[in-house]
Structures are given as structure tokens and as C-alpha cells.
Picture 1 (cartoon, rainbow, N blue to C red):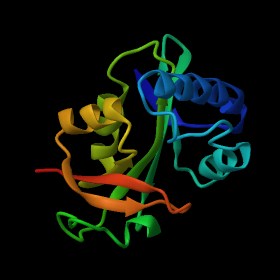
Picture 2: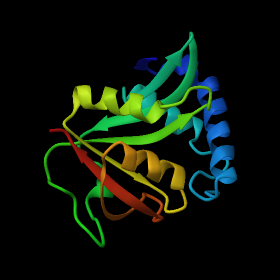
Picture 3: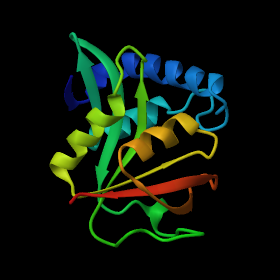
Picture 4: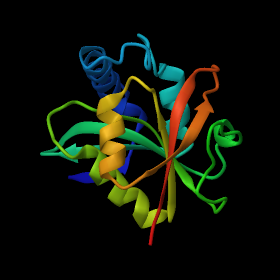
Length: 162
């Protein structure tokens, strides 16, 4: 699998992947994390223009996408019922989604992220048991609860290299 920065021309395929991911979430007991239409075209364009959006390619086909953003994430400034492992510089993985065609997308994204950053943070909905399992398998530590930009709660995790 190869990973490259997303392009504006990838947006139709990204919409397909997010629709597949939303359906998968609903089928696995997580109907509230990504409501219909999330992420919006505007948000996808913003992620691409900022250089933070990536696609995973297998057999010349985009099979997954994620955002890897370095720097302070404002939604992580306050954490409840816990604490971050440290305050060292970090990157955040957001909006990771797969078409389901290839297994192990999260581990590929993590390997990529750790080539660029030593500390990674991520969050997910309490109902997203599939993602919680992938996060635990990748070696993240549970840190507490954060609130997203829209006020909804998320379980927050951090991974530190070495």
C-alpha cells in the first residue's frame, strides 16, 4: 500500500469511502459519530488545501483516507477524567476511513504517521468499538474524554514512540 497527499480530484472517491464507512459504523453499532454528509465537501477541500489529507492506494485504487495534522488541536486543549501522557509536540489522526477492500489500513496510517511524528493523538466515539480495538492494538494509551468542535464527547488516546 502506498500513501500520498490527497488531491482535489480525489474528492468523489473520498465521498464514496466516507459513505461506505458511515454504513459500516451504523452496522457495527455506531450510528451517531458521522452523520449523513460528514465530512462535507468544504471540509475535505480544506483538509486537502492544508496538506493534511492523505489517501492509501492499493492496486492503483484509493482504498482509504485519513487526515494527519501536526500541531496543537484546539479540541484537545481540555481533557476530562484523565490526562495526556505528556505535552510534547504531537500530530492528530482524524477522519480515517476505509472502503473495506484492504485490511490493516489503520496500521499503515500509523506507520506513516510515526515516520513524521513521535507522538500521535486520536479520538473516537464511545460507540465505535471497531476503532477502539484498532487504537488499542496499535499501542495507544487511553487518556480521557475530550469534546469535539460541536460539543460531543470522544474518547481520547495518545501514542508515544520509543
